[in-house]
Length: 70
Ligand SMILES: [Zn+2]
Image 1 (cartoon, rainbow, N blue to C red):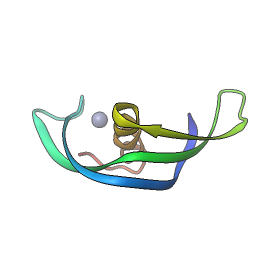
Image 2 (tube, helix red, strand yellow):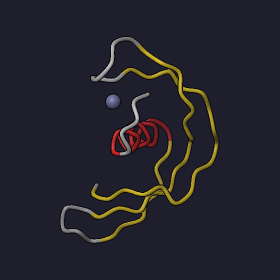
Image 3 (tube, helix red, strand yellow):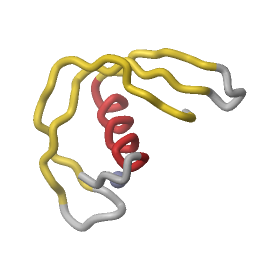
Image 4 (cartoon, protein in one colour):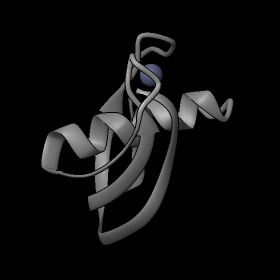
């Protein structure tokens, strides 16, 4: 997933996450459903909606792309 960008999000909830860059866990706000535009490994633009745990992981990693830890 290259150049990911969240286009739409819905269903806010409070999550508790850990991170390989931190000790312990922290609370953070996440969204149940996210619509993401990105390029795949062939650099073709794709738009896909993710929900649940995959959506939470993507939000965590996209925060890292913006220099944000939990
Ligand atoms: Zn992390």
